Every structure is written in structure tokens, then in C-alpha cells.
View (cartoon, rainbow, N blue to C red):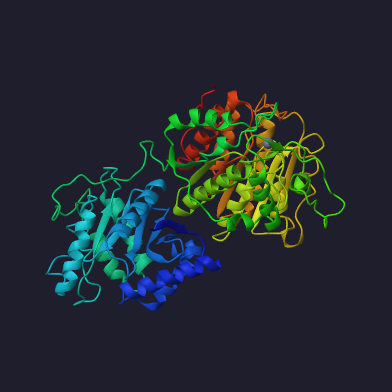
Length: 590
Ligand SMILES: [Zn+2]
């Protein structure tokens, strides 16, 4: 088993370890490679300007992070193309599965970036160019592999001229047009070939060589070699939907309805998920993915161990159809938790309306599994993932539950992602995201931002003030925007703009959005008046940042409008992420 994920930053210990394994594969599989070129990878990942390519590293690894293969893709945004620098499986890997999965990933990324295609080099299968019989066989098998995608060498140019006379095996230049069926015009090809030779091989190719190769491009459009191996097969194409951008990875808590508090007035009910699904699935921009199981260690990384133990035990002990509501709150003597489990509820809870029942722990644990699965999809390279779960989580603090929340799924995922790069959490629920604030209050690698009803009138009443800015090294990394009782879409966006500006300044690798839909007009728990169009615009503003974004479902209780607002939010976000410069389209109002 393996998963494919993107390595975002070389400055984190876990990423460094992964990059070392990538380097080992390079040394094993490309013995002629210069050690200085291998050492360059760390710098390439963090310093795109210097190398005039933005480097994107994908690795295929297993759950113990053993790297089985990798692809290093370079993106030249100025000329709008990608160059695949390396793609290789580790020496111990047999079979083609990893290579083709990595190559599919490369194509998806090139397409999502809106480039014209992927260029790369392939050693020749022509005996006149390659004297080594063994190598010749291997090269032929590689070219056969790419022909399956419809990719062949560009022909009738001097690209495969050895840099030094007598060098064996000069590579072909290959071009993958990603199934877009657009011709590659000469002028464009010349610019790109010059960029490849200068940026990638500037230190080995003399100027005169570059000129000779560039001017050898005469055909317009560029021509490709005839099919040699496969006959003209239909290329498998890129696995994307017909709308032209990578879909949103959607993970649903299929066990959400085991948690059903039927007490009168309990608005956090199973119908919420159904209402949302009904509206978002027909958009065609979601790909439904199975949740996986994760160990409790991820929960314990952000929640107090005794608190987790307590929830597990007490829920397990509550008879099937009963609910325990906290009723004693030992706020004075933290050293003496009440002995009786049901009485102890208030020791770990912030309010009187979040009950414990037999399935609360199981449902909350599953919500965490879903959210971690969605986070892994982000690491695999999905630009947007949506964890559609209940119970919600953003009111759950390190050692407290409340506000219908038990475990803080968004915070657990944010902590998980923080091993790969800085994370910003944006909480756009009507109520303050006190859980994340509490969990990350002293940290500066996870920025927490929340826009919510002022605590003087809105739950949770005791946090969410603007002077809560963090503590110790976390000072300045918690931002609250408490807003008045009556807010419309226009006013809301003023503050959303400010929040996003602060996030951009922080420059995170990942964004986690705690999505509450209770900012909508008529929500029984809120007082604001956002309409469907506002949700589309809010989504677009967030999508425009183009951070890999994990969205986690929090509140929102007006069943009739939940789905429409969610649909508009994601449509706006997805469209802006993939087509940032497209003209505005009117989102539907109903
Ligand atoms: Zn809420």
C-alpha cells in the first residue's frame, strides 16, 4: 500500500527525513548524477525565485513514511509550462504501479495549474544514439510506457545533440499536452526550450549550444515521432471531472446519525448532513472518498488524555437511550474531580446543553477520522477537501466539551498538518472558535482567526474578545473579530477581507476553514442575515488565496437553507481556486 502526497517544505523535521529518502533514491537510480544537484533539492523547494522554477515534490510512501518513489515537478509560471525533472521508484520497488500513480499525479497537478503541459526528457531507444544495449532496452520500455498516454518525443529538431561530442545517450524532449489536444506552436516551443536549457542546464550547456538547439525548431506546430510501440491507443487521460479542475475531496461521517439527541429543542440533528448533501452532490465538483481509521494518538495530541479517557468511559457506560446533561461544575477545586462518572461531566464541560450519550464518543471519533482522511487528501495534492461531519468540534477545548462539540476535529487536523508546514485556521461559524483558540493559544506555527458574534450577546459568552491575542510565543497568533448583533453580507466581507489579509501575512502552507453556516439569515442560533449570494462571495474570497484548504463542517441549523448556502460557498471557492481570473458568474439565488 502507498499514498501519494506532496512535500511542501524542507524546513520541517518530517519533511527533511522524507527528502533524505528521495535523495537516496536519486543516488541509487541515477548514479551519474552530481552530488551538488542532489543537494540542491532542499533549496529548490523553498527558493523558487532563485531557480526560476517553482518545485513541487510528490512522494509515494507508506504509513510509516517509507518513501517508495517520487516525482519532482518544476512549474514555470511565467511561460505557463511544467518540466518534470525526475520521476523514479525506489530500487526495492517492483512493478509499475508507483510510477504510473506518480505520473498521473503529475498530470493532474499540471492541469490544475492551468499549464499547457508537461515537458521532460527521456533517454533514446535509437541504437544510433545509444551504444549501451542494456540501457537501450530500458529506454525502450520507458518510451513504451509514455506512449500509452499518447506522449512521444518531439522530432525533427537538434534537441538530442550531445553537449560534448561523443557523449552517449543524449535525451529526447517529450511533451505531454495533457489530453487537451492543442497544438504546440513553434514560437512557444522555442521559448520553453530556451528556458529549460538555461534554467536547468545553464551550468553545462554553453550559449552556442542553446542557440543551436533553439533555432533547430522549424516545424510549426511542433511535430512528434510516430507511434512505435503501442499503435495509436486511446490515451487514458487525466482522471478529472469534466469541469476542468481537480474535484473537492469529500469525506462524510457515515456514522453521524448514531448520535441523535432527540430531546426537544436540540438543533444539532442528523437532517443537517442530508440537507447539505442533497444540494452539493449535483454540482459535480465533489469526489466522494471513504473515511479511514486513525489511532487515538492524534486526538490525544491536542486533547488532554484524562479528558479523552473520561469521554470514552462515560459514553460507554450510559445506557442506550439516555442522555447525561452536566449539572455540577466544580470550578473551584480542579484537583478533586467528582468520583461518579455522570456527576463528573461538568468537570469537563462548559455548558448545560451538550449531553453525553452512548454514541457521542463513537460519532465524535468518526468525525475526527473523516477530518484526518480529508487532511491526508490535502497532503496527497487535492487543493480542497471537505469533511462533512457532525457532531461539530470547534467549541471543544483541550480538556473540555460543549456547544454540541466533543472533539475538535479541525484542531486535530490542523495539528496533524502542522508537521508539514504552517497552518492557519479560519473560523467562520457564527460562534467563537474557542476550542482552537484554547488549543493553539501558545503556539506560533498555527494561526487561529475567528469572525463571530460578540461574546457579550453570543455563545460561548466568555471568549472571543478582541484582546485575546495569544500567549508566550503564541502572542499575536490568535485574532478575534467580534461583530455586532446585526450584520449583513457586505459588512461581513469587510471583516472577512481583514481576516484573510492577516492570514496572507502569516503565509501558511495550509488553510483549515471551520465552516459554520449559522451566519445565515434565520438561523435559530444566530442573529445575522447572510444570504445564498453572500456564501458564494465568501467562498470565492477564500478560494482566491489558493492555499491547499481543508474545510470542516461546524454549525448551521436552519435545515431549509443549509444545503443551498453550502453549495454556493463551495461553488464560489472551487471556481475561484481553479479559475482565479475568470469573469464573475452569477451564483444562483435559490
Ligand atoms: Zn455555531
